Amino acid sequence: MIWLVALTAAFSISANTYRQIDAKGVGNCIFATHGLPLGGEATYSDVRKTFTAPQTIVEHRCYFAKTLEEFAKDGKLENSLRDSGKYWSRYTIRGVDSSAELLNILKPWTYGEANAKFDQSRSILDPTNPQCHVLGSGHTASSVGCLDIEKTLRWIAGDKLPVTARVCVDTFYTVADVRGERWDEARKALLVGPLTEQRSIAVGCVDYTVN
Image (cartoon, rainbow, N blue to C red):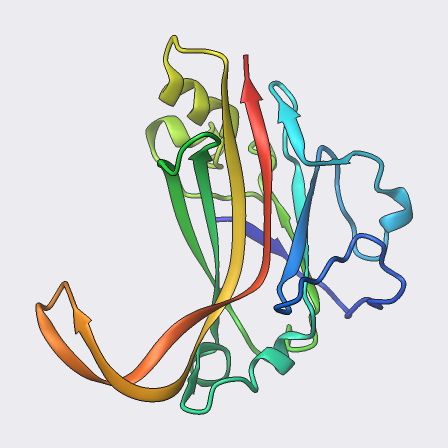
């Protein structure tokens, strides 16, 4: 799991040069080797899209197109924010030149009054920071229990270095607008009910190289 540092207020979209919202209304995430405090964009000095070990991805900040309470209004039948107070961040590591998924961690977040007006989030990824508490196992966990990207890639690559992988985060919620039929592979049955889909709030990726 990744520790999400609480934000105290939404930040002005017009004043934020790092915020990039695509045509579908999906926000972006930036990654850096240093802290990314709220409202401190003027101090951000090492935001980058590529990292090379031993550089550490200390934090990432994700910018949303609107506040979480606005996303909670979506969905005619269901909305995970509105109905169950949940949204998620999925962290993946993939090979740059293939679709092979090397690691997938799903972290649930609780939605409520305290974060309803958030229009961005900050997450600590530094494996040496005690506030970061990714729950991994074996090669994926550092001595303090955090995901260690360099250690993970070295374990995967073995003696086949250098290796470059794509590290991505996708923060999303689920909604349903219509009812219908869907096949449940796990149950081997045809289910009738709301057709739920994932909707991304913010997505970002960087490339990480171990030589």
